[in-house]
Amino acid sequence: MNRYDYHQPGTIEEAVGLMAILDDAKYIAGGTDVMVLIRQKKLKPKNLISLRNIKDLVYIDTAKGLRFGAATTHSAIDNHDIIRRNYSALTDATSHLGSLQIRNVATIGGNICNAAPSADTACPLLVLDAVVSVVGPKGARDIAVDDFFQGPGKTALAHGELVKGLSIPSFGENTGSAYIKHTRRQAMDLPILGVATRITLSMKNGAEVRCRDMFCTIDSISNILAKLKEEELKIDEARIAMGVVAPRPMRAKKAEAVLTGKVVSPELFEEAGNVAASEAQPRDSIRGEAWYRSEMIKVLVKRALIKSMDRIIRPDEAIYPERLW
Ligand SMILES: Cc1cc2nc3c(=O)[nH]c(=O)nc-3n(C[C@H](O)[C@H](O)[C@H](O)COP(=O)(O)OP(=O)(O)OC[C@H]3O[C@@H](n4cnc5c(N)ncnc54)[C@H](O)[C@@H]3O)c2cc1C
Image (tube, rainbow, N blue to C red):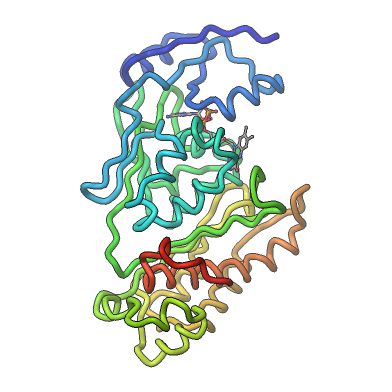
């Protein structure tokens, strides 16, 4: 059995200081990745530095955009009404990650630092333009989340650095986002493919697009988009991110360019899906074959874009039944 010493610092400075002096040490937050690796003997640290007692790593602040601490649990994010409404892609991910027991202890910092290509919060953070704040022996710095992921299990963190928190800009009422996790079963499964999208409509028309009458709450989103076609809703900014299609979670930048400045239509969303599929480099794995992932990117990008639009149109989705897609 692997033996290690367990350290419980109370501050960020103390944790970084311990990492600088201890031999073969590893940070541990919820432990849902670390302890599995230790049990599997794939990881044999001599020292574990727990982040659980560091109060400064656990917070959610929505005063200006969204800021949260690295040791915030998926459940805490999932239960936050403002995040659910304004940053829906993120709660789409946290609500389907692992089981309730996992979500109650596992942290968002752990999810991105583990840097699995299948990490559920990665794609939402990419489309929400998140910035990762880190601190280490040489001081503090910010890293755009797109630069943070470097490969399977690899991040931009230098030795000894820890993630302090993440921040996401505030988006107006004219923004909607979504994450779709494609799995073989409803719960406790890693994605075959994950797709997140964000659409920000140009302000002029954005305010016009909300549900105005009853038809909007019950009609299909495809019908609504067809009816809205004549209003020429333009996309100001678009983001598409895909997981499990490359060594790291990636943005589909060519597909984003297809959408930017264009008028919203189902045909445009379909074109973006096709372009996104051409940008991915999926491979065969136990969860799905490359050709299947490519085909599903086309379907899920279109679906996630439609869902993002729906969230602009019906921001109070929670009070209406979820549409069928
Ligand atoms: C049964 C089960 C189901 C799961 N289901 C899913 C799923 O559906 N989707 C999914 O994405 N994941 C899933 N996971 C994986 C895991 O739960 C998540 O990745 C989780 O978010 C990890 O967070 P943690 O706090 O437990 O990380 P830990 O295990 O504590 O740490 C993970 C890694 O991050 C490092 N780390 C942690 N915090 C910091 C920090 N602040 N700064 C620097 N480094 C840090 C650690 O050193 C380690 O390398 C599952 C795991 C289990 C056991």
